[in-house]
Image (cartoon, rainbow, N blue to C red; front, side, top):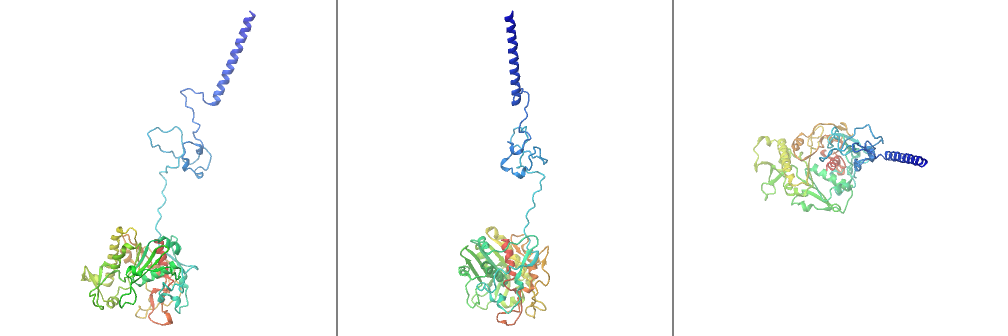
Length: 452
């Protein structure tokens, strides 16, 4: 009997121990978080966690700025990464930064700088070269430092565009950008001024004995009875950059009617571009054209130019008017160039608008003068919706030819002309057409360099 009681007591102790062990097991499993029935969904430990630790985050695109707070529920709108497969979406919510907000406003397109509008500002770092030093490239008649002129404030102004910064011209950088390229100026004597200005700018007004004269490669040789070749060309060997000028006062083809007669008249083919352009266009990378001041009755008579159209003497009375003939030719040349550009993808073409004349109280042959020395007597700024040279603007409209619009900004600089000053102090007709160099044409080239 006593043995039976002892055995019963042992059995109770064993059952209590087993129950205690089982309870400890349940508590241990509960702490581990794995004791769930098959019908229960266990909460994902990554649900609403810090994005930096989420396995659904695009870690390669996330930055510290994307997640400024460790709060698992940031106040900003959470973007849900779109699924590109047919699988059902995951149960967890991840963060993604590679899907753009459909309501996000795209940044505005960068507009091309309008160099037409702006103002002249004094700059103590001007000029970019010395009128004394740039003797190899600069014609004496335009180097006002060599004359008896004593005021040179006109050299110390630069053009500041209205809504953008015009890059400072740096000769070495410009030559590197123009490596293995040819820049061609084709036009009248004002085109030559722009060419000489560029040569002085890229050399800093130094002699540069390394620069090669390659005019013969372009046919620039002294013809019999000619005072000078009809062009100049120089090459910078360090970058293989060629800068040239060709004299073509009207931009149209001039053909001698009797090549055997030195006194012959010339057919002025208004509907044909200058032969130099047709023969050398494939060699150019930047072409700058201008014409204008030679289109007058005096020049046509003195040069024996006769208007031709369609290979025959012009019979159109409207085109026979000098101004109309000029505009017709400009339109014809630009139209031809625009048609050629697809065949010369390396080429950029610019037509330079008129350079203003500043003859007061007469014209060049009737006592006109421009001997004022006060800088910017008519103000310093320009704000126009269209070019002051309406004909040039009309000619390039709808084409791939760029307009180098310098008319309005140059009109403010009447003090910058050669005026009455001459080498040796001789007096004569005042030159209120050409500019002193250094001077206004340097700004034309600065705008050109920025556009290139």
